[in-house]
Amino acid sequence: MINSKYFFQGLRSLKNFDSPAIALGCSFIAIGALLKNIGFNIEQSILSTVLTYALPGQLVMAESFLIGASLINIFLAVWLVNARLYPMTVALMPQLKEESQPKWKYYLSCHFLAVSSWLIMKDRIETVEQKYRIDFWIGIGTGTWMTAIIATIAGYLLSDYLNQDMVIGLAIVNPVYFTCMMVGAMKNKSIGTAVILGSILGPLFFIVSPEWSILFGGLLAGTIAFIIGEKYE
Amino acid sequence: MNNIVLVILITSLATYMPRFLGVLSSEKIDAKSKLFRWFNCIAYAILAALIARMIVFPAGVLSESNTLIRFFVLVCSISIFLATKKNLVYPTVTSAIMLAILNSYL
Image (cartoon, rainbow over all chains, first blue to last red; front, side, top):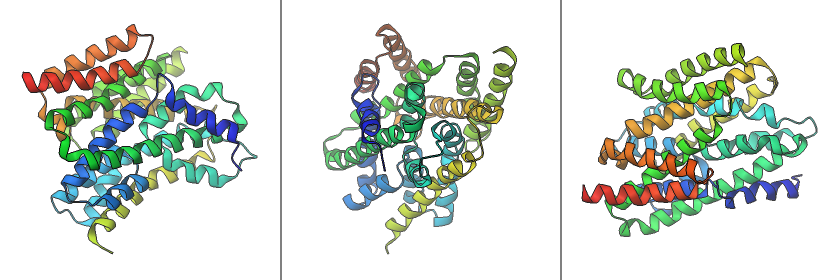
Protein backbone atom coordinates (compact mmCIF):
# COMPACT_ATOMS: atom_id res chain seq x y z
CA MET A 1 0.00 0.00 0.00
CA ILE A 2 1.60 3.25 1.16
CA ASN A 3 5.27 3.16 2.09
CA SER A 4 5.20 4.44 5.65
CA LYS A 5 8.81 5.60 5.72
CA TYR A 6 8.23 8.05 2.85
CA PHE A 7 4.75 8.94 4.05
CA PHE A 8 6.08 10.08 7.42
CA GLN A 9 9.03 11.82 5.79
CA GLY A 10 6.51 13.87 3.82
CA LEU A 11 4.35 14.45 6.87
CA ARG A 12 7.36 15.59 8.90
CA SER A 13 8.21 18.31 6.36
CA LEU A 14 5.43 20.23 8.13
CA LYS A 15 7.56 20.87 11.16
CA ASN A 16 10.56 22.26 9.29
CA PHE A 17 11.53 25.93 9.31
CA ASP A 18 9.87 26.38 5.93
CA SER A 19 6.69 24.64 7.04
CA PRO A 20 3.49 25.66 5.29
CA ALA A 21 1.57 24.88 8.50
CA ILE A 22 1.69 28.42 9.94
CA ALA A 23 0.49 30.15 6.78
CA LEU A 24 -2.10 27.49 6.16
CA GLY A 25 -3.26 27.61 9.77
CA CYS A 26 -3.65 31.39 9.78
CA SER A 27 -5.66 31.48 6.58
CA PHE A 28 -7.98 28.64 7.56
CA ILE A 29 -8.57 30.22 10.98
CA ALA A 30 -9.82 33.20 8.98
CA ILE A 31 -12.00 30.87 6.85
CA GLY A 32 -13.46 29.21 9.94
CA ALA A 33 -14.37 32.60 11.40
CA LEU A 34 -15.81 33.76 8.07
CA LEU A 35 -17.99 30.66 7.66
CA LYS A 36 -19.39 31.13 11.13
CA ASN A 37 -20.19 34.76 10.38
CA ILE A 38 -22.12 33.91 7.23
CA GLY A 39 -24.25 31.38 9.08
CA PHE A 40 -22.64 27.97 8.58
CA ASN A 41 -22.74 25.63 11.58
CA ILE A 42 -19.58 23.89 12.75
CA GLU A 43 -20.27 20.61 10.93
CA GLN A 44 -20.86 22.47 7.67
CA SER A 45 -17.67 24.50 8.11
CA ILE A 46 -15.62 21.35 8.69
CA LEU A 47 -17.29 19.64 5.73
CA SER A 48 -16.38 22.59 3.51
CA THR A 49 -12.65 22.36 4.30
CA VAL A 50 -12.63 18.54 4.24
CA LEU A 51 -14.25 18.34 0.80
CA THR A 52 -13.09 21.52 -0.93
CA TYR A 53 -9.72 22.32 0.67
CA ALA A 54 -8.94 25.32 -1.55
CA LEU A 55 -8.82 28.74 0.01
CA PRO A 56 -9.78 30.99 -2.93
CA GLY A 57 -12.59 28.61 -3.86
CA GLN A 58 -14.03 28.66 -0.35
CA LEU A 59 -13.82 32.47 -0.28
CA VAL A 60 -15.73 32.68 -3.56
CA MET A 61 -18.28 30.21 -2.21
CA ALA A 62 -18.80 32.34 0.91
CA GLU A 63 -19.17 35.55 -1.11
CA SER A 64 -21.57 33.99 -3.62
CA PHE A 65 -23.59 32.38 -0.84
CA LEU A 66 -23.92 35.73 0.93
CA ILE A 67 -25.36 37.50 -2.12
CA GLY A 68 -27.70 34.55 -2.72
CA ALA A 69 -26.18 33.40 -6.04
CA SER A 70 -27.74 30.38 -7.75
CA LEU A 71 -26.03 26.98 -7.54
CA ILE A 72 -24.98 27.10 -11.16
CA ASN A 73 -23.44 30.56 -10.66
CA ILE A 74 -21.57 29.34 -7.59
CA PHE A 75 -20.30 26.35 -9.58
CA LEU A 76 -19.02 28.56 -12.40
CA ALA A 77 -17.44 31.14 -10.10
CA VAL A 78 -15.61 28.47 -8.09
CA TRP A 79 -14.59 26.58 -11.22
CA LEU A 80 -13.10 29.76 -12.69
CA VAL A 81 -11.07 30.61 -9.60
CA ASN A 82 -9.87 27.02 -9.15
CA ALA A 83 -9.06 26.33 -12.80
CA ARG A 84 -5.45 27.13 -11.85
CA LEU A 85 -5.37 23.76 -10.12
CA TYR A 86 -5.34 22.09 -13.54
CA PRO A 87 -1.95 23.40 -14.76
CA MET A 88 -0.61 22.96 -11.21
CA THR A 89 -1.58 19.27 -11.22
CA VAL A 90 -0.11 18.73 -14.68
CA ALA A 91 3.09 20.46 -13.54
CA LEU A 92 3.47 18.04 -10.63
CA MET A 93 1.97 14.60 -11.30
CA PRO A 94 4.30 13.55 -14.17
CA GLN A 95 7.18 13.93 -11.71
CA LEU A 96 5.47 11.58 -9.25
CA LYS A 97 4.64 8.89 -11.83
CA GLU A 98 5.80 5.35 -11.23
CA GLU A 99 4.61 2.27 -13.11
CA SER A 100 4.47 0.01 -10.06
CA GLN A 101 2.27 2.39 -8.07
CA PRO A 102 -1.53 1.95 -8.20
CA LYS A 103 -3.54 4.65 -9.97
CA TRP A 104 -5.99 5.28 -7.15
CA LYS A 105 -3.19 6.91 -5.18
CA TYR A 106 -2.92 9.62 -7.83
CA TYR A 107 -6.64 10.20 -8.27
CA LEU A 108 -7.23 10.34 -4.53
CA SER A 109 -4.19 12.36 -3.51
CA CYS A 110 -4.81 15.07 -6.12
CA HIS A 111 -7.42 16.32 -3.65
CA PHE A 112 -4.50 17.50 -1.49
CA LEU A 113 -3.21 19.71 -4.27
CA ALA A 114 -3.22 23.33 -3.10
CA VAL A 115 -0.73 26.17 -3.35
CA SER A 116 1.03 25.36 -0.05
CA SER A 117 1.40 21.61 -0.58
CA TRP A 118 2.38 22.16 -4.22
CA LEU A 119 5.15 24.65 -3.45
CA ILE A 120 6.65 22.49 -0.70
CA MET A 121 6.49 19.33 -2.85
CA LYS A 122 8.12 21.11 -5.80
CA ASP A 123 10.86 22.26 -3.46
CA ARG A 124 11.57 18.75 -2.15
CA ILE A 125 10.91 16.64 -5.22
CA GLU A 126 14.51 16.13 -6.34
CA THR A 127 15.50 14.80 -2.93
CA VAL A 128 12.92 11.98 -2.92
CA GLU A 129 13.44 8.64 -4.65
CA GLN A 130 11.25 8.47 -7.79
CA LYS A 131 9.54 5.23 -6.79
CA TYR A 132 8.17 6.59 -3.51
CA ARG A 133 7.50 10.22 -4.47
CA ILE A 134 3.75 9.58 -4.48
CA ASP A 135 3.89 8.26 -0.89
CA PHE A 136 5.93 11.27 0.18
CA TRP A 137 3.32 13.49 -1.52
CA ILE A 138 0.47 11.72 0.29
CA GLY A 139 2.33 12.45 3.55
CA ILE A 140 2.64 16.17 2.76
CA GLY A 141 -0.96 16.26 1.57
CA THR A 142 -2.37 14.55 4.64
CA GLY A 143 -0.45 16.93 6.90
CA THR A 144 -1.49 20.14 5.13
CA TRP A 145 -5.10 18.98 4.79
CA MET A 146 -5.34 18.06 8.50
CA THR A 147 -3.79 21.42 9.43
CA ALA A 148 -6.45 23.20 7.39
CA ILE A 149 -9.25 21.19 9.02
CA ILE A 150 -8.00 21.82 12.57
CA ALA A 151 -7.51 25.53 11.81
CA THR A 152 -11.05 25.79 10.43
CA ILE A 153 -12.40 24.39 13.69
CA ALA A 154 -10.18 26.74 15.72
CA GLY A 155 -11.27 29.75 13.65
CA TYR A 156 -14.92 28.85 14.03
CA LEU A 157 -14.61 28.56 17.81
CA LEU A 158 -12.41 31.66 18.17
CA SER A 159 -14.39 33.92 15.86
CA ASP A 160 -16.05 35.84 18.70
CA TYR A 161 -12.66 36.70 20.19
CA LEU A 162 -10.98 37.86 16.99
CA ASN A 163 -11.22 41.57 16.26
CA GLN A 164 -11.06 43.03 12.77
CA ASP A 165 -7.37 44.03 12.94
CA MET A 166 -6.40 40.54 14.06
CA VAL A 167 -8.30 38.97 11.16
CA ILE A 168 -6.59 41.39 8.73
CA GLY A 169 -3.23 40.41 10.27
CA LEU A 170 -4.05 36.72 9.75
CA ALA A 171 -5.08 37.36 6.15
CA ILE A 172 -1.69 38.80 5.12
CA VAL A 173 0.23 35.69 6.28
CA ASN A 174 -0.84 33.60 3.32
CA PRO A 175 0.30 35.97 0.53
CA VAL A 176 3.50 36.71 2.47
CA TYR A 177 4.27 33.00 2.85
CA PHE A 178 3.52 32.31 -0.83
CA THR A 179 5.62 35.28 -1.97
CA CYS A 180 8.62 34.09 0.06
CA MET A 181 8.23 30.52 -1.26
CA MET A 182 8.08 31.86 -4.82
CA VAL A 183 11.19 33.99 -4.29
CA GLY A 184 12.89 30.83 -2.99
CA ALA A 185 11.71 28.84 -6.04
CA MET A 186 13.28 31.23 -8.58
CA LYS A 187 16.23 28.96 -9.24
CA ASN A 188 16.47 29.23 -13.02
CA LYS A 189 15.67 31.67 -15.83
CA SER A 190 12.33 30.19 -16.84
CA ILE A 191 10.84 30.03 -13.34
CA GLY A 192 12.32 33.42 -12.46
CA THR A 193 10.73 34.99 -15.55
CA ALA A 194 7.44 33.18 -14.90
CA VAL A 195 7.22 34.49 -11.34
CA ILE A 196 8.20 38.10 -12.14
CA LEU A 197 6.07 38.42 -15.28
CA GLY A 198 3.14 36.64 -13.64
CA SER A 199 3.12 39.00 -10.69
CA ILE A 200 3.11 42.00 -13.06
CA LEU A 201 0.54 40.71 -15.56
CA GLY A 202 -1.86 39.30 -12.93
CA PRO A 203 -2.79 42.65 -11.34
CA LEU A 204 -2.51 44.43 -14.73
CA PHE A 205 -5.04 42.12 -16.37
CA PHE A 206 -7.23 42.40 -13.28
CA ILE A 207 -8.00 45.99 -14.23
CA VAL A 208 -9.42 44.76 -17.55
CA SER A 209 -11.08 41.51 -16.46
CA PRO A 210 -11.12 40.47 -12.78
CA GLU A 211 -12.48 36.97 -13.50
CA TRP A 212 -10.02 35.97 -16.20
CA SER A 213 -6.95 37.94 -15.09
CA ILE A 214 -5.22 35.09 -13.23
CA LEU A 215 -5.68 32.54 -16.02
CA PHE A 216 -4.84 34.86 -18.93
CA GLY A 217 -2.04 36.65 -17.08
CA GLY A 218 -0.55 33.31 -16.01
CA LEU A 219 -0.91 31.75 -19.44
CA LEU A 220 0.81 34.66 -21.20
CA ALA A 221 3.56 35.10 -18.58
CA GLY A 222 4.17 31.33 -18.44
CA THR A 223 4.41 31.01 -22.22
CA ILE A 224 6.89 33.90 -22.49
CA ALA A 225 8.92 32.37 -19.64
CA PHE A 226 8.87 28.98 -21.39
CA ILE A 227 10.16 30.48 -24.66
CA ILE A 228 12.92 32.35 -22.82
CA GLY A 229 13.82 29.21 -20.90
CA GLU A 230 14.03 27.05 -24.06
CA LYS A 231 16.19 29.64 -25.78
CA TYR A 232 18.70 30.50 -23.07
CA GLU A 233 19.01 27.42 -20.87
CA MET B 1 -30.54 18.01 1.94
CA ASN B 2 -30.36 21.64 2.92
CA ASN B 3 -29.07 24.48 0.84
CA ILE B 4 -25.73 25.01 2.60
CA VAL B 5 -24.69 21.38 2.18
CA LEU B 6 -25.61 21.59 -1.50
CA VAL B 7 -23.48 24.74 -1.86
CA ILE B 8 -20.56 22.92 -0.22
CA LEU B 9 -20.92 19.91 -2.51
CA ILE B 10 -21.14 22.07 -5.65
CA THR B 11 -18.03 24.02 -4.57
CA SER B 12 -16.15 20.79 -3.88
CA LEU B 13 -17.10 19.30 -7.23
CA ALA B 14 -15.93 22.44 -9.07
CA THR B 15 -12.65 22.21 -7.15
CA TYR B 16 -11.98 18.50 -7.56
CA MET B 17 -12.66 18.62 -11.31
CA PRO B 18 -9.49 20.51 -12.36
CA ARG B 19 -7.44 18.31 -10.00
CA PHE B 20 -8.92 15.13 -11.48
CA LEU B 21 -8.49 16.32 -15.08
CA GLY B 22 -4.91 17.26 -14.22
CA VAL B 23 -4.11 13.70 -13.15
CA LEU B 24 -5.88 12.35 -16.24
CA SER B 25 -3.78 14.53 -18.56
CA SER B 26 -0.61 13.68 -16.63
CA GLU B 27 -0.94 10.02 -17.57
CA LYS B 28 0.24 10.91 -21.08
CA ILE B 29 2.77 13.61 -20.20
CA ASP B 30 6.39 12.80 -19.57
CA ALA B 31 8.24 14.83 -16.92
CA LYS B 32 11.08 15.44 -19.35
CA SER B 33 8.94 16.66 -22.24
CA LYS B 34 8.61 20.21 -23.58
CA LEU B 35 4.90 20.14 -22.80
CA PHE B 36 5.67 19.48 -19.14
CA ARG B 37 8.15 22.35 -19.01
CA TRP B 38 5.53 24.65 -20.55
CA PHE B 39 2.95 23.62 -17.93
CA ASN B 40 5.56 24.10 -15.23
CA CYS B 41 6.15 27.72 -16.34
CA ILE B 42 2.41 28.35 -16.55
CA ALA B 43 1.82 26.94 -13.07
CA TYR B 44 4.44 29.20 -11.50
CA ALA B 45 3.20 32.22 -13.48
CA ILE B 46 -0.43 31.59 -12.50
CA LEU B 47 0.55 31.32 -8.83
CA ALA B 48 2.55 34.54 -9.08
CA ALA B 49 -0.43 36.24 -10.73
CA LEU B 50 -2.78 34.97 -8.02
CA ILE B 51 -0.53 36.06 -5.16
CA ALA B 52 0.15 39.48 -6.69
CA ARG B 53 -3.60 39.95 -7.11
CA MET B 54 -4.14 38.99 -3.45
CA ILE B 55 -1.79 41.80 -2.42
CA VAL B 56 -2.64 44.52 -4.96
CA PHE B 57 -6.39 43.88 -5.25
CA PRO B 58 -7.29 41.79 -2.20
CA ALA B 59 -10.65 40.18 -1.64
CA GLY B 60 -12.27 39.82 1.78
CA VAL B 61 -10.97 41.49 4.95
CA LEU B 62 -7.57 42.35 3.51
CA SER B 63 -9.23 44.97 1.29
CA GLU B 64 -9.91 46.99 4.43
CA SER B 65 -6.18 47.61 4.91
CA ASN B 66 -4.14 50.31 3.19
CA THR B 67 -2.35 49.26 -0.04
CA LEU B 68 0.87 51.09 0.88
CA ILE B 69 0.95 49.41 4.28
CA ARG B 70 0.51 46.00 2.62
CA PHE B 71 3.43 46.73 0.27
CA PHE B 72 5.56 47.90 3.18
CA VAL B 73 4.79 44.74 5.18
CA LEU B 74 5.53 42.56 2.14
CA VAL B 75 8.90 44.22 1.44
CA CYS B 76 9.89 43.87 5.12
CA SER B 77 8.86 40.20 5.11
CA ILE B 78 10.87 39.35 1.97
CA SER B 79 13.89 41.13 3.49
CA ILE B 80 13.55 39.09 6.68
CA PHE B 81 13.15 35.91 4.61
CA LEU B 82 16.37 36.60 2.70
CA ALA B 83 18.27 37.79 5.77
CA THR B 84 17.42 34.68 7.81
CA LYS B 85 18.64 32.20 5.15
CA LYS B 86 15.13 31.60 3.89
CA ASN B 87 13.42 30.90 7.16
CA LEU B 88 9.67 31.20 6.71
CA VAL B 89 8.52 31.35 10.32
CA TYR B 90 10.00 34.80 11.08
CA PRO B 91 8.65 36.68 8.03
CA THR B 92 5.14 35.21 8.31
CA VAL B 93 4.73 35.79 12.03
CA THR B 94 6.20 39.30 11.74
CA SER B 95 3.91 40.18 8.84
CA ALA B 96 0.74 39.33 10.78
CA ILE B 97 1.79 41.34 13.84
CA MET B 98 3.04 44.28 11.75
CA LEU B 99 -0.12 44.57 9.68
CA ALA B 100 -2.45 44.19 12.67
CA ILE B 101 -0.60 46.94 14.55
CA LEU B 102 -0.10 49.32 11.60
CA ASN B 103 -3.70 48.91 10.58
CA SER B 104 -5.11 49.79 13.99
CA TYR B 105 -2.86 52.82 14.62
CA LEU B 106 -2.48 54.45 11.20
